[in-house]
Length: 157
Length: 267
Image 1 (cartoon, helix red, strand yellow):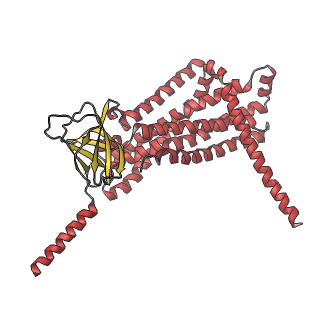
Image 2 (cartoon, helix red, strand yellow):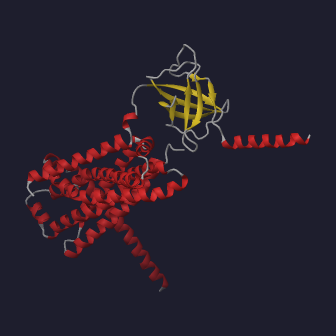
């Protein structure tokens, strides 16, 4: 095997190898939607965040508009503080509602933003005041059972 | 009598431990010397390119074919389990995450150790047995800079590319079986995969893993070759040791790296 053939094959090898890396990054890992654009940070307090994770999506109308940056526990109000990095391209009114929602029945949890009607927009460091906690399945079931029990008692009266 | 036997056994244990520690120290000094004297290999890059050919290009067939079949088997087995939970659309996630995080770097590393690492050891060992290394020293050519360093860098460059190719071939194999053969929806296959695989957390960590494995395997290979007893038996033993030690090193390093990478910010 002469020199130029070796060079040719190594060139092909390196090209194909990097093509595989780019394939992994773009087609498998979806680098395209991994936005490195400028973001601004807002936070919200929730009584219960359920299974929300750091880096979980923040969606509005189903579109991913940001990521969960940090989750902490507030020692004073005994609530969870969720910091979110929102894409600067998306602006939300100050009276936006933040909800913890689940995609599908067993899917991951995400923060859903529902825009309000205020003229003033949320700025960096602002707090989203209107929130709705995650639905905890156990609470729902126990509520349902209590209602059932109450219904069963009433006719006996 | 009892005490003497006990003592000689203790001595043997101590001797084994000391010689192993000495060997690790020798291997580390060897690596440091190798890296410091790799100027020639990088300046005369053609030397390294030739080794990329031997370590990388000639391993392409085994890597691509194994990757394809591993991906196909993953898709078949994964589908069996996932469809019980009605989650067969997550097949892409299962195939991609297992390949990118674990199987790609580890299996490619094991194949690389047995395909290229053993060849490197045998080559350097034979050079030593036929006194080519001594001849170089006589001509004032540093054999580590001229022979060992290009092989080391050739292996280190090849390994991450081979692991990436393994993962890509595996995902293609999973696509063939999952989408074309079984009939999982192609859109769900790709979109769920893209939603679940993170570029920095999964793909970049996989690349780092394969780079670490590449360094470990080629280091062990060149060291075993250079350290081989210069006889036919010594070279064959060194070759065996390369494959065994590198495989164990890959599996042990994989556990350490996984513990560091994937258990951190995930709670």
